Length: 244
Image 1 (cartoon, helix red, strand yellow):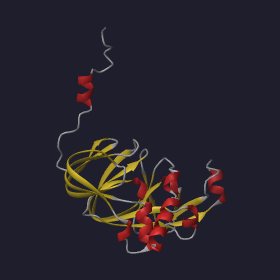
Image 2 (image 1 turned 180 degrees about the vertical axis):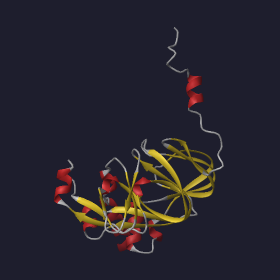
Image 3 (image 1 turned 120 degrees about the horizontal axis):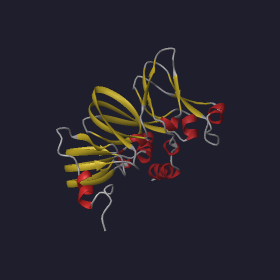
Image 4 (image 1 turned 90 degrees about the vertical axis):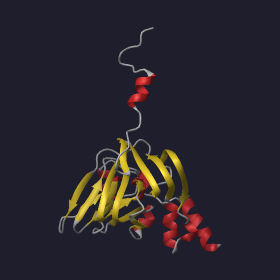
């Protein structure tokens, strides 16, 4: 039986999907939805981000017990990070999302934890729950502040948009669609009962993020409700540690 010209043979398929040749960069896109990281020492990744690796790598989760405060313990339990240690090549992705690689050069970026795929250990990081009061009531958005010089990879749905924020011209965003923002901006969470109903999201918490000051906000054309919640089991786990 003759094979249709439009259907590739196994050999052609393997050749077309074969991994890219080595790059001078430790972080690079293997394809639009996968990041390749050449590890020589260590790299931080999000749990579940690793899809394959070769070489000698071990994986260590950032322990909750070593947190310096209850708040840090909560964020570590809610937004865990894993360190891949050794020498090898690591491939990362997340549910078919687009993988974006960028480099910070002695600067900072705050990103929603659920968007993080990986980042270099040269970047200092801290995690925090965004918002006070209403943030906890609504579940809370866990954010990671990255500062210094180094590469990072983010998972996005579609093409992100960078919205400038200037004094007197604030920007409001849907928390479920917010990717990150400049460290110079301090977002507030506010309730707006018309927000969800007006935009067809009835049934969800009517919460907006309000950015004031000067900087930029990154949003994506996709709402991810699971990003804006603190899991009950995480709270119970921290409570057990505190009461132990």
